[in-house]
Image (cartoon, rainbow, N blue to C red; front, side):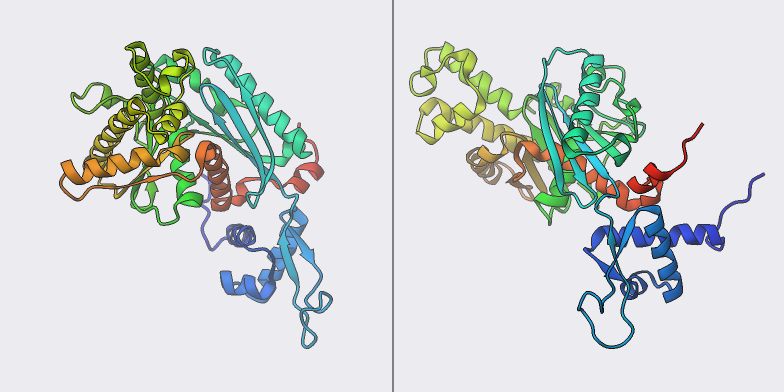
Length: 402
């Protein structure tokens, strides 16, 4: 029977101390041993010992001491450190239905390379798997990285995802969208795309997000929900799925804003509508054409915006009633043009529903919201448990394994 590790074990204490110092290094530009002591409560000797060990492992690099750097002239010079720029990288991928967008970033979140690959939405699961692997290789090559330099890859998919990175088998679309990405080479985390959008909004978009639902609204609706500071998942990763809208009378449908704007505009053109929209070929009409025509005063487009606003208002009330969220964020590629629709939705909330009603806001992250969230989640997991990963220098100098 094995011995249970405790905090009194020297090895466990050393690992805990090392993890604390790496987390500190990930947050600050550079630091001294004294700052490590203040942050962690370690003695000077222990702090210096841990820093020296992390330098040897490849996590840190030692800088000129404070006197050599011209920062001090009296007393004992302070030893200074920082996270090694080359310690590793993370990859975030938005594996959407129509395109894959990937970003490789350093451990401070600075983008090193970015690529977008188009694909046929009818592509099979194996094709999507190969495309993801190819995208990671292209990102590494563009950033000048080796395979071992990528410590973690996070892939966002338009499907519910459980804690093991798998999607439920009952829906063929979900299986195609997530064809076993978690089994790709290296450490890979698969997550629902709307959940990643919520992560992105919390980290970079809306700092005071609070309890909120971030709704991805393109072809279909999906929400990432943060309550009490935690991302909701559910047993199969289905928290935030909107399929219930298709079966609840009066709730609308799970069709997204872009899909509805396009289909309603095409219907209006087919019925003989006149104006700016009518001058477009029906098969070429997109949501942005509707928003642009509405801005120019097109009557048909304005009616479509009214219908979209009413739909969003009902959706917001459903989410607030079920989850008691105080804010609903509309995210995705249409977010930068959605404000006129949200104005109408806010008016519907004020006129037709009793308070409290949720605040409606548009994401500021545009079509990048999922890939931004993927990078943010990768960095968050790295900060949470950095010693799960092997930094770049160690990976290159370690002896080969059998």
